[in-house]
Length: 152
Image (tube, rainbow, N blue to C red):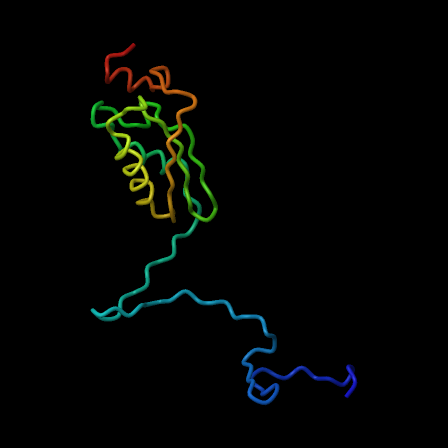
């Protein structure tokens, strides 16, 4: 049989022995999002997909819920956040510093920032990186933080 007379099999037709196709092409079908999932406790609705890219304002609001335990000001107002990178896939990267390299909160503050950011509905994941350059100094504090700490 020459190439002109070859006919692509119709959908649902046997193409050759032992092979059956429900699609005319061999391209894999897109997977649909599940509408429910089974658990030992019974069927539960699948979690809704997080839609959209996180916005900077909501990330800043989440970070502002984290306080340095030694200073009654949130870490955003203290100027500890150096960068916030938002990605279309919903991931967020935060670069932050600490007031001093030997800060007793060095272990817990980054974890608290990560957890606060990941609570945002549109965030799929968050990473927090501690950076030391440029070093933190009091000039990075907001006016509100200076007023709260009586540092003019």
